[in-house]
Image 1: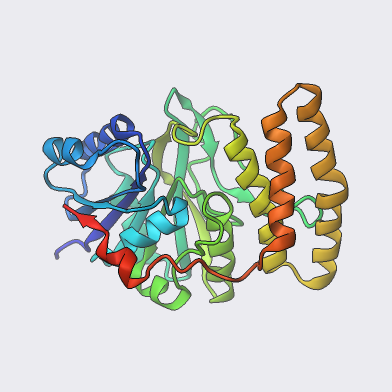
Image 2: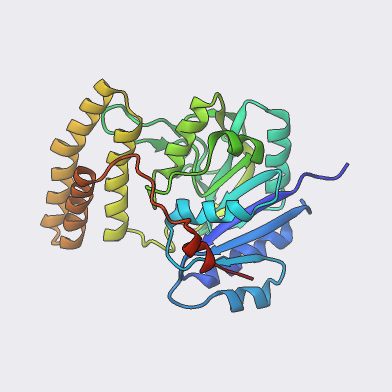
Length: 312
């Protein structure tokens, strides 16, 4: 029997070398029925010629503007033909059994809407980053990853339902996406997969951790480990998620904590370190939430936008 087609989608922003390393790791795959879609998020330097020369089998889509993580992946989804969709950060590297294991798991678990593998650090290959996650605290709206910084000694080789996915590596069925819809592009970067998972759950589907599959992650290559850019979107989108998804009493508690405790504490912490860019970013994140709707999606897929796409 022919294996189901898997559409692998990854988003590149000005890191062609990292993306090339990810694509090269696909040569080790034991699963042989897949297509690869690389979305370039308006990188300052042209990357398509370099990647297409070394990897002629990829579908390369160049966006005329940076759509963020959600928008870039949604653009790739529009061109995907697979029965299964695998979204992977461009700073990941695949292990040989990764896709086959995830496809088999989804084939046998119809209740699972999003399947996430064990994620290990590329530069510490025996150390776990993600082995499932505990859900967001009703007060702080923070979560934590199970297995974080633990040694991969077999303890986390199980498969189970978990609260939250990790956006670095997620597989799902096309049929479920048609019911749930694409990621919300209002987030741009961070929290979009958590918002997506919330919608999967509302549709009666579950998030599962599949510890028999694994992938390596370099983490924060394109955004910077501790950049003000990262601080802005983490704070902006934490409050945005609260606004979009929490019932009224939980919203009041979480929004109050975020506004009156978390935001001033972090601004002061960065100010004491003279990290003025971070303090300004956090202030701007709060300001954005006070001046923008939580549910108005950006209209980026206009006919004019689509005419500017470059597809190789």
